[in-house]
Length: 516
Image 1 (tube, helix red, strand yellow):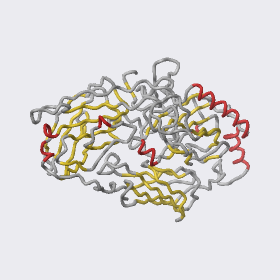
Image 2: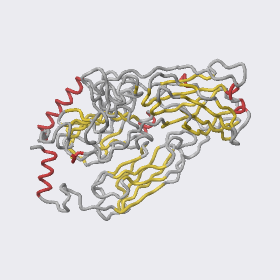
Image 3: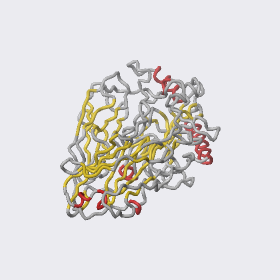
C-alpha cells in the first residue's frame, strides 16, 4: 500500500512536481524536451488532531453532555453495523465531489499497524487517520468561502473558533471545529473551519443541511480542507463500504469510487512558477501572453495519476493546425498519486516559435496516458492588456434531488465546464439566492459548485427556486435558475413521518438524541 500517495493530507503538503522543458534554452529550434523531475512525493501524514487535542476535546464533550442533559446512546446495533436511520444523505460541503472538491484521504482501517488500508484497498489514507479529507483547490477558494453543513439533524456538543486558518506547516495547532451528536451513538467532528465562520454553539439543535462553518486550514493542517470524522459508539467509523470495508454503506446512495485520471484545475501564465510559493497559495494565471514572452508555464491539479502514466502536449494555432506536438514521455514517479499538482514550462523560441509571431486564440492540449485532459485557451497578443477580462463561462443549474420533499436537504448544483470555467483562468465564485414562494431564505456567495438548503425551510406545495450568478470578482455571467414544487408530508416536528406531530414524535426525538 505504500506505493500510493495522497498529495494533500492534514499535515503533509501538496506534491509539487514540475518538469523543466528547455531549462537551458535550446540552441536548435524544435530540440526534443528533456523533462527533469523537480519535486518529491508527499511524506506520510499525521492525524488532524494530536493525541492531546483529541483528549481535551473528548473531555469537554463529556462535560457538555452533562451540562445540556444528553448521553451517548449505547443501544445502537454496533459500531460495525450502525442503525440504518443514520445513513448520510450527502457529503456535508459546498461543491461537487470530483469536480471542484475531492476526497484524498479516507479512514485508516488498520490503525494498529504501521501499514494503511482504506475502504477501497487503494491505500489512499495514512496511518491512524480517522476521517475523510476533502480539500479546496487553494486559499483563493477559502477566501471566497465554501460552506460546511450538518450532515444529519443533531445537537452541538462542542464548538471552537478564533484560531488562525491559513496554516501550511502542521505544528500541532488547535483547529476551529464543530462536533455534533447526531443520535443513536453517532458523533461527527467537522474540523479545520475558517476563523470566525463557526455559526453554532453548544446545545444548539441543528437541522441536516444547516451551515455550521466554512472550510479552511485551521489546526494541524497544510492546506484548506474539511476533515469529516464519524464516530460510532466512540469508535472511528468509515461510512464508505468497499472490498476492504465490508457491510452496508453508511450513505443513502454511495457514489462509485472515482479512480479515473482527471484534472480539476488548470492555469496558463508567463510568470516563473519556480519563484512563487506554490499551492495551496493561489497560482498565477492569465488570459493573455505577449509575442515577446520567451516562456509559457502551464500548471494543473490532478486526481489519480498512476505510476505508469505518460504526458504529452500539443500547441494548436488559431486556425486549428498543430504547431508543435511533444510526443509522449513517462512521468517516471514510481508511485500513484491520489491528488497533486504539476507544472511544465516551455521555451517558445525553441519549441513553438509561431507563438511569437501568430496572434489570436491558441490552445494547449494536455494529454495524460494519451487521454485528452484539457484544451486550454491562450490569447497571444502584441502587448498584454492588464485590464483584459472576460466573464466566466455560461452555466446551468439543477436541484439534487430533482423532486425534493420537505424532509430533503436540497442541493443547487452548477452545471457546465468545471475545469475551464473562465477563459482567463480567474477563480470563479457563485452567488446563490434561494427563494420560497418568492421570499429569499438564503443568500450566499461561495466558491463551491453547489450549495445546500437545510431541510424543512420549504413546506409541501411551496415553490422553491435557486438562482445562481457566476462571477470572476469583476464581471458577472448570466444568471441561471431552477424551480420546483416541494412535495411530501408536513415535516416540522414530524419525526416518525406519519403526517401528525404528536407524543410519538417526542418519544422518537428522545430516543434518537437524548439517549436511554
